[in-house]
Image (cartoon, rainbow over all chains, first blue to last red; front, side, top):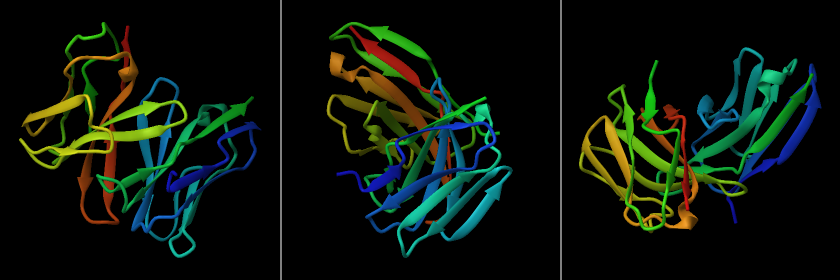
Amino acid sequence: KNEVEQSPQNLTAQEGEFITINCSYSVGISALHWLQQHPGGGIVSLFMLSSGKKKHGRLIATINIQEKHSSLHITASHPRDSAVYICAGRGGGADGLTFGKGTHLIIQP
Amino acid sequence: DVKVTQSSRYLVKRTGEKVFLECVQDMDHENMFWYRQDPGLGLRLIYFSYDVKMKEKGDIPEGYSVSREKKERFSLILESASTNQTSMYLCASSLYQGATNEKLFFGSGTQLSVL
C-alpha cells in the first residue's frame, strides 16, 4: 500500500478554473515536495515545504504536518498547466522520499 | 541553472543485451538517484549514491547495478536486459541541506524499450 496518496488521480478542467490537488500521507515526514512532469518526461521541482504555505506565481502549496495533508492550488489555470503533478514526502523510503502516483491534470481551452 | 543530463532520450535494446544509461550533473551535488517510472506505479527508486564510489540499493535493485567513479556521473547498468525492464528511467540529483531544505533536479528521462 502506497503511503502517499494523491487525489484526484485524473482531473480535467476548463481554462481559468481554480484547481486543487490533494496529497495525504500515512508516514511521518519532515517535509513534502511538489513536482511537475510535462508530457515527454522531464520533472521539475515546484516546492518543498515543511509548514504553512508557499506561493510561486499562480501556484500555491499548503501543508499541515500534524494532519498529514498537503494541497497544491493553481489559480487562473491555463492549458500550459496540463501536466502530471507528483507529491513526495521526505522521511520514508530508502532514500528518504516516498512518492505519490501523481495527478494527471488537463486544462482545456 | 542546474542541469542533469541523461545521455539518451529513447533507447531500443534486445533481450540479453548489456545496457548503460548515463547521467551527468553539473552542480557538484553529492546525492544522485536512479528511478524508473511505470504507468500506475509512480516513481520507484532503483539505486542511489551519496558520494563517489558509494552506492545504496533502493526499493527495486534486482537486475540493475550502478557505477559512480566521478562525482558528476552516475551510471545505471542493466547487465542482461529483459522485457520487464522496458520503462522510463529518470536520473535525479539533490542538494540536501537539512530535512526541510532540499532541492531536487531531474533529467529528461530515457524511455527504454527492450524487445
